[in-house]
Length: 452
Image 1 (cartoon, one colour):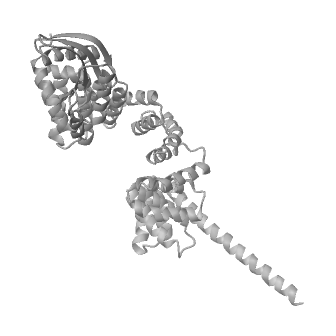
Image 2 (spheres, helix red, strand yellow; image 1 turned 30 degrees about the vertical axis):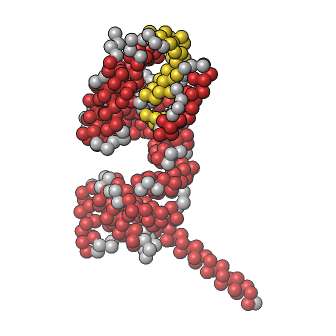
Image 3 (cartoon, one colour; image 1 turned 45 degrees about the horizontal axis):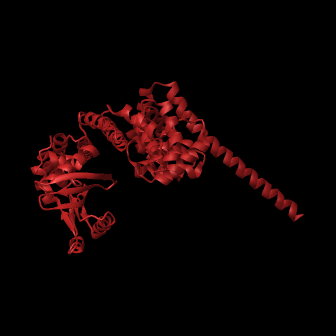
């Protein structure tokens, strides 16, 4: 007898709970629908005036707040939307008749639009707890994390939003940019490409895609985009710089200089980019042996940032070269001109003697001339090795040179460098038939040469 009674009581209780839930849900929907319907049925100004009057008597009038919230949200009046939905969001805890998920979403969206990123996070996350498949909440939470540079969380939000609604095209750009900023270039490219297809004039996305392509080894495609972006006031300077560096690596110095000169004509180029552009343009001019223009640009860099890279050393070096054409030939000319200069050097080194060239060997690091020196009181077979480097050369180079002297059965060897020789190299030649010519002595001899 007792068991049937208990069953009846439980069934009745369950029915009551279900009815209460249905009524609660109906009340939420009813309030929402009424707010939207009122805005449609009456004029906007009338509705706002009525709601403000109600709120002056009761600031927590849910119906008035939700009605005003609808108006301001649709008008993109984010400041007023933020104020109203912040109030509604706080009230959601104690007022079940309010739509907590909607309040949190709109509070988060308006906070994001007002750049109140920290204030947007909590309501958006609360919305996702209540409605895990809410595309807008996931999307705007991703945007917030992207703004805060919390890239992995941003990527996770965007990917989940994409799974929720694969038809939405608005996800492509932020997801592509988040992956790009996280340096996941290969993953970013498909989304950036789709974003460009939808917005062909989006320069930020185009630039990011070009950088991503460059990082993934698609240099030719990246270069085309950089060249397209060169005139742009925002992304032009950086695009010119990237295109110029690509052309420099390909030894297309004329094209590189053109890239850099376009950048220097653009307005309001940031100093940190302008310095790089002028420095790289200077090195391109040097590669073409146009020392005056290169020096002028380096001095401009020096005036902006005196300690930038090796500007001081380059100015000293190329200023010296600019004053000595033979030194320019020694360091910068092609092989045939360099060999011709080395022949002249030997004639100056042995004034009055007849110099007969037996053999010329061109290596990656140096040039060797095997010669016979005929003077009034001597005739010697000698070998000259010329290095163009400006570094300090150790004894290993001199030991190798000494072995070459013995192999060729030469009477003597002369090793020349634009740099210097180490102390151990000087010690090694003691008692051996080797002369070491360093920069200072080299420059003196070059000044005596009259190259026609």
